Image (cartoon, rainbow, N blue to C red):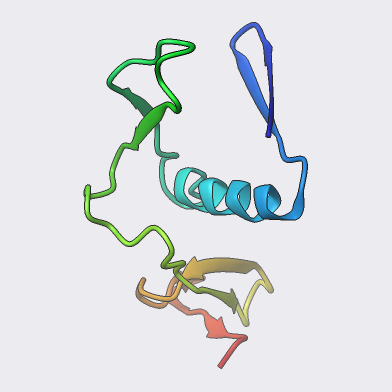
Length: 106
C-alpha cells in the first residue's frame, strides 16, 4: 500500500486487490454515516529499521471487537415525502413526517 502525505491529509492508495479489501474494512470501521467518525490513535512507537509495523487503536471500539463483523445496512423510504435513508440493521426503524419509514429491503 502506498502512503502519500500532503500537509494534514494522509492518502492510503491500495496497490492490489487484497489491499483494496483491507482498506474497505478500515473505511467501514472509521467512517460512520449517521454517527461521528472514529479516530485512529497511535499505539506504542515506530522506529524505522527496528519496528516491522505501526499500530493504531480505533477509538470507540472495544479492544476485543470482531473487526471482520460488518453491520448490514437497511434502506428506508418515507411514504409521505419520499426521502430515502440507510441505517444500520441494529438500529430502530427511523421516523419521518411523524410516522415510521418503510423498509425497502424487507
